[in-house]
Length: 392
Image (cartoon, rainbow, N blue to C red; front, side, top):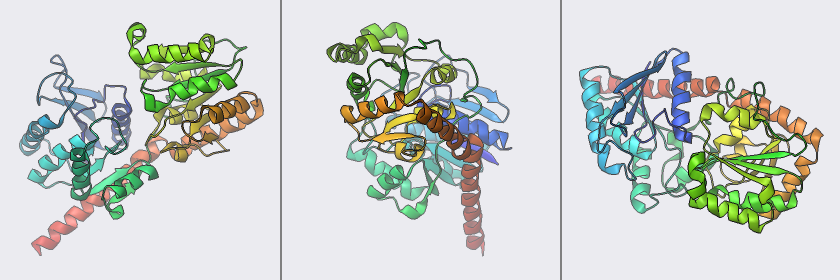
């Protein structure tokens, strides 16, 4: 099967959640015998037009709009779609297009209609609960996309509920979870050095308020003796001048936990397994999050989770089996859960064992790619059936 992955604003060479998702899903599909081409918008004048990143996976950089990152991709969607349509009509044409994020969906639907191929849509986050561009314009586009594409692939039941709320019919959706590379993320391998006498709590993500790092710092008041290490944000050399990092450091001073708080900054994705392996547990405390990749990666490394009972965390983490879930925005409850798990080595071990098994059984990319491939086959069969009925 020939598959076009449309990820116009998130190159598979990046380290964000969607970037990694597209790269890993494409590689897993290629391993199952599919031919995958990933289309992304050029944001670097020096970027090559085509790059073969793995057997069966080619990344194509499309020039549409300025050759730099922009805040608003919408004005360039039409040009992006025109280039896609031209390339598909005049050369390699996919059997199915899979769009990631709403702006990619607009481009995919516009281009796919020209050559009559089915479109599958993954939103990754919705405007009503995701960051940025939360106005009615985006919600309207998402609703129209959900009704126009052949299938919507949602990653969590929380996302399904969000799509239903904005008017996308439940019957048009298939739930397929995000995956994790269980070969790269595993308990076996090097770990970042640490003080063996001090329990380590790890937290990972962008330094934005809704990720709950402020709650984690306040919670550390109730976990004496442990350290918390936050991985994420700008590069280490930019941390001193970063406003969010400065605010977190000030909060740590105010809570008198500054000597047990470490802010690392951005870490290359390939180095993340060694950080997870260095931790006794991972804390993920977002206020409202559809998907938390760090939880899956930590579980695959055999690390138990303490998380807030929101979004995808309620599905990835089995409360009382692979980790503990607490209410969001409640540092005292969060601190209590962290303290209990830090002080209970046996429970940490049983949680870690169950977390590793769950990651491998339910979230491996091999399993996820097979499920997504079944969605592609289904929409292609429906398209072929419709065409046959039209001919008859």
